[in-house]
Length: 339
Image 1 (tube, rainbow, N blue to C red):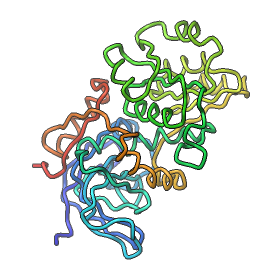
Image 2 (tube, rainbow, N blue to C red):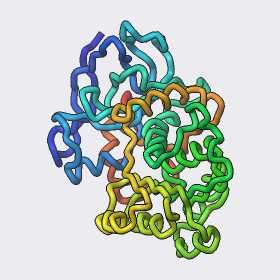
Image 3 (tube, rainbow, N blue to C red):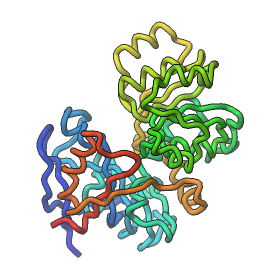
Image 4 (cartoon, rainbow, N blue to C red):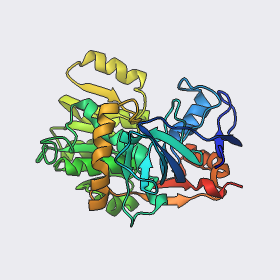
């Protein structure tokens, strides 16, 4: 068996990506090796390259969404067998990322997928569901914990960016948690799409959102999840966040928002990013429950677009994400199709 693989290498800070032959990762006793069939693209990867964020050891392999087969099993692992169809997150550490043919990952951060679900679709799930789950950072009890499912029945939540992949996952977890209403912002053409995940009210994101939310929900929202995280959505969220309310944001907080938080300490605002290797206890519980959620259809994948040329197609795909040319779907590559 070859000890080499094709991988998309990020050789140095700000450097362009390159497809190279690279050592295949080895596994420890509590880990599994996944033969990746499909890898999902995420905006964080172009942000890492463009802005030089995160402390990485170079050369690095990025990519946070992997779907494939279990190829090797550590001696302590009893929850999987070789050939199981699974999903996992690529990680910014010694394990490497999903822009490769193989991924080594702790077995407790892996979930099985149904036979009926394609690997391409499954690759849309890992980072989005992990980032959505980080809403526990604003005090929400995850639905898979004792008493969590249905706990928030009758309480409202606002999701900014409902058609984004993270937004879709937030909606689904909110539905499992019993939230009602589940109010989201989205483009009108995505209204039925986000309602299919559990949204109850959809506000046109191109409209004057704040007055519309204030008219419909004059008390504001105790819980808000900003799945876009840019300055304009942070402003919307802050404007309709109720006193004693909590806001989760997927990007670092804008300076003006930090200033506002200092003025009003009754409101809680957190920046969330869902790498489950970092949020290990949360990730352990999430991935233990995720297989059953997927089998039951309680968590569903998003629409996908498969890019050509395998790993060699990632760079162009990330440019599309940076230019905001992707809406309501996940870009996916298949490493085996790399020239």
